[in-house]
Picture 1 (tube, rainbow, N blue to C red):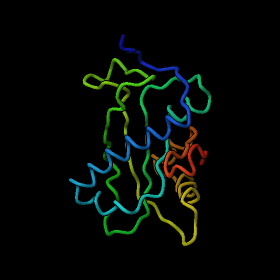
Picture 2 (picture 1 turned 90 degrees about the vertical axis):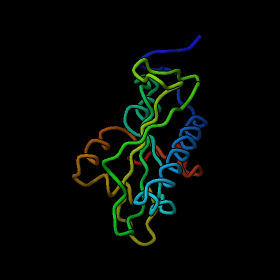
Picture 3 (picture 1 turned 45 degrees about the vertical axis):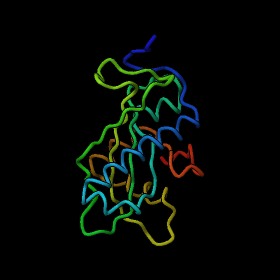
Picture 4 (picture 1 turned 135 degrees about the vertical axis):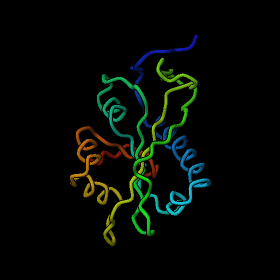
Length: 163
């Protein structure tokens, strides 16, 4: 039987974070292959993070998982910023998290992927660059810092809370 519910209350484990990362990176690779501006950032990834409601659910286990919000942070550099008004979606596929009834055509929870190119100071750790960006006053930074954020890539920092 297919588990269809607005929110999944299954706990997110560290192994799930790896799977979120792999699915998001797969989608980003597709984007890099077809979008000229995004492709400038293929080698500039700082962090992938789980954000918003999914991150809150990972932290407290009671929020419920509606969708999987992944933010990709890239080092600024090329003449054009990473396309920041675009949201890409991917299908997480069948899993213990089921799927939302709102996501017609998906076999699992929807992954929303958004990205930003941010300033990096020499010798600064990627998570410090993101923390500094989060202190800014862009609408995205203000909204994101209201809930926890956890690193999902690189895997050696898996589960590190950055705010």
